[in-house]
Image (cartoon, rainbow, N blue to C red; front, side, top):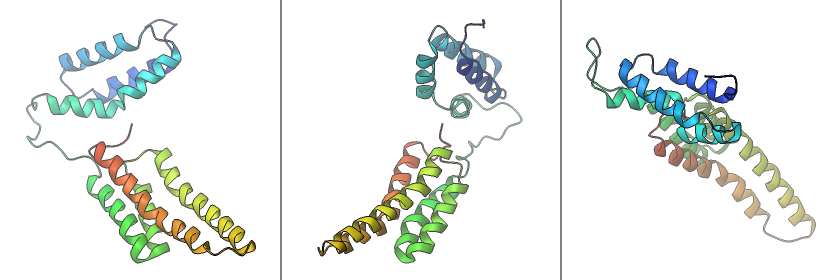
Length: 184
């Protein structure tokens, strides 16, 4: 590569080569060459967008491993997604726990989601911040409704109560779409 290659492209290709280190050399070379060809010549913004579309190099490497025949010395079984069982358990705990034991169950579910490898840091941070923001908005709405003597503050509290199950459903859908593999 030359000096005009954007840093994000260089970093991505380096990570891709590292993740593909245990894949057959001809397959690895084909994948890296194809992706390099796609990324070279793009401006930094275009390269970033294309890198986002391609996804995490670990996921690309996992797909390459799954598509190639097993090498001698390796087991024949394809391993499950890392942390899949704990990721599914985290979602179930968040949904059911927040209904059965409202505050404690939700906190335990969020802690399990934070420990899971199926979601990005951004998703984990959002998982914690959304309930806080919704709770603040529910309290403010409840106070406003009470100050103008309008009944209905219970609706604001119900919304705050339902945020955890809805959040759990969103995590379940996102995890299932990625087959519970780590996010890019």
